[in-house]
Length: 400
Image 1 (cartoon, rainbow, N blue to C red):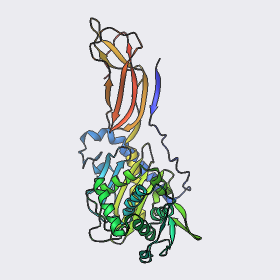
Image 2: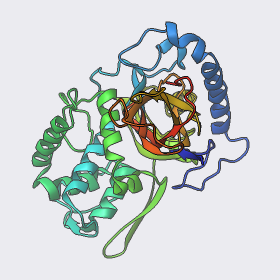
Image 3: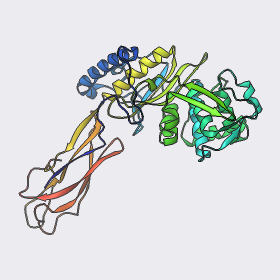
Image 4: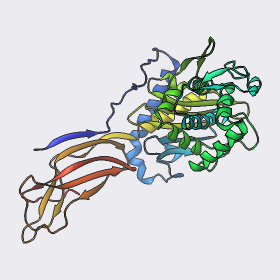
């Protein structure tokens, strides 16, 4: 009579459908990940014992003392599915976002252009952007797709101003659109002065805002395609071809799928990263890291620690009595789950059942096995699953 069902389950491991990369044995990245994983497993083991007495910090899952220590001046770790903040430090501090600015640039371009094969023309100002560039010259024509790939992989400023000019008429016009979109997305601690992230007075963002922006952008499959590849070949007419490589080291891992890194003398190293080293996809932001090596180490530690906060849990088993219902002139009726439900959930979370059942008392006792309604389980704003509720006799104690 009863069935077992699993919802939203992904096998724990270091693979991702978008990637098929492997880190060579002995690679320093594996050593870093091993240390981080050990720390994460230890923190996961003590989580149940400490969660009841750890104070909330800025809405985070647990106090910073239970998370890895990082060198970043500001940072945040977020569940990409729900937006829940798992950890943060100085997440609302206004800091220079460097080339992570280009996340907004790419988002706006994708929202304006459905046809990414459309050609755009490089403006005269590309000659001022040759420090980080692919070599566009004024008048060159390049597809929106190739320009976006250059922006999000190489951080090419000449491609960036080309796209900004195509959309906004000028970079100044484009920046107005950037700030308008930031307001619409609720980025209250973000203000843009240019499309590139070049340090300028009044150009700033925060770790919380960058996480929100990155999470929103990752909903678009086209954006995920832009930021999920380490190396690309950028081409434009008549026969230009430039190979570019991303500085986002999370893409060196088979579970890494984005997003953007940035670096200037003023901002130091900034990372908005995305990956799924465990059961759920996470967004990590670190700002003002001293080196790329430290940035990678901190991001790995946070992602692995955050992954250890989740588990695959049986929410209800087939045949479990979940409640009783009153029957006119008869004994209470046991209501049981008609199927099992297993889901990925935070270890500290308590699922909420939402029942859809007829009004009580029932006019008569239904036959054994009759479908009475459903129960939907929710957690952290997600629907974990829904199961049928069946009549059962004789009545038993209510499970919930």
